[in-house]
Image (cartoon, rainbow, N blue to C red; front, side, top):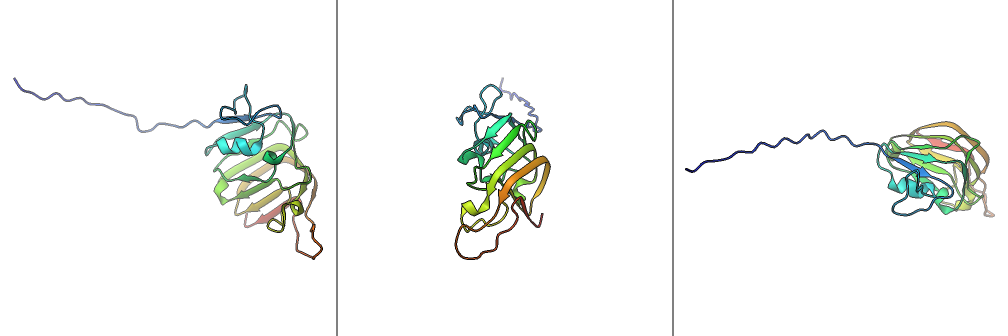
Length: 173
């Protein structure tokens, strides 16, 4: 007796991805396994490098300093960056660079509940002359409950240049 056996397999093609929460703390470490509440990452740039569209970066209380916490390019779609509060989570740029650069690639991003201090777009050289705390270009971003203190854009060179937007520089946003 020769026959055919048929097997019907059904796969649900509507697999839903769950947005992740990536945790940061000033006591954290930027390692391949960081990002949990128990093992947080140390820098915003590293946390964002782990993010996928729709993820959330949760910044614990503290003052974040160093190269990984300035010159932040928010280029992952629909990511939110949330601190523990405007007076509790501080990005101290140490007068050595800029805060956030946000463009169309960020989709509907949000930045909330933190402070940015000591931003200086003149410290980054002639290529970035605007927007010490925020440079927004073709961006759809919600910025809520954010304080900016001690931000400046001034030429470090002897020649006169156009510098603008110490706290915010907004173009087509």
